[in-house]
Each structure stands twice: as C-alpha cells, then as structure tokens.
Image (cartoon, rainbow, N blue to C red; front, side, top):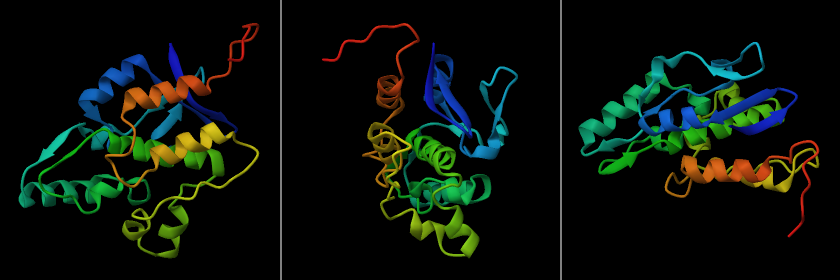
Length: 187
C-alpha cells in the first residue's frame, strides 16, 4: 500500500513500503522535481540515481567531513541540499533525514510552484546561508494546517529535530483522506 505525500495540481510523490526499506540503506542524494517523473499510471519514478550514497554516513574526522561536503557540492543540487551538507561536522552521522529535507523542498515546490530556495539561487544570493534560517511556510487556505506542519517538520534546519522516515510515514497516513464510501467516526 502506498503512502501519498501530496496530491496537487503539479503531481504526486509517493513513498511505498518497498522504497521505505530501500531508503533505510541508501539515500537518493539529489531529490528534486526534475528527478521525479510520472509513470504511465501516474506513479512517481525516481530518476538520475547517480548521487545515490549510503543513507547513514559516520563522519569521524575533518578529512571525512570535507570529503562528504565536496561530494555534496558536486552531486546535490544546491537549492535542494540539506543544511548539514553545506558545512559537514566531524563526529556526526549524516543520515536519511538529509533526503527528508530534499523531499520537503520537492513538496514545497509542488505546493507553491517553485522550490523554497530557488529565488535565492536565481538572485545569486547565498543558498548555504538561506538554508540555515527557519523556513516560513506560506499560510494559504489551499492547504490544510496539518499539511503545512508536515512540510515545516521536513524543513527543520536541525537534522536531529527533523523526522526520520517512519514518523514521516505516520504523518502522511494521518493526512490521507478516507477511501470513497468509507465511513469515519470523529473521535
């Protein structure tokens, strides 16, 4: 059974149970709208897996930190790159929450027509600096407060406060509308 992240006029991103198991071991590394295509049935397909890497990377020293930072600079689109990949710290673990950030940027682009840092990049301003500040999700009646809260949680600057995949899936499940004909009882 799939978990719909967002359904709107610009497309759908789905995380299914198989991909969830896959993400636990490998991270996509360069999630962005142009790397997500829709298949014949409208199911999203991840493309351009050239930035695939281990989902959890232990960074023990400054040499490893610089190597990961250089890798991210070469392989990850700047306006969709997680804050922790701009200035990688030693004695840390960079995990799948970096992809959760990028997926949040994709969701933002689906909701508002452009990525949260696209304008910063286009003006030539520092994306590395912009991603270090909390993101203000525009308030609009078009999207529910729970969906905006989900987006905010995905775009949390501190990776330790950003959700892992299982809680993210639980939030997605809570957003899913009931199936047609399914009765719901408010609690």
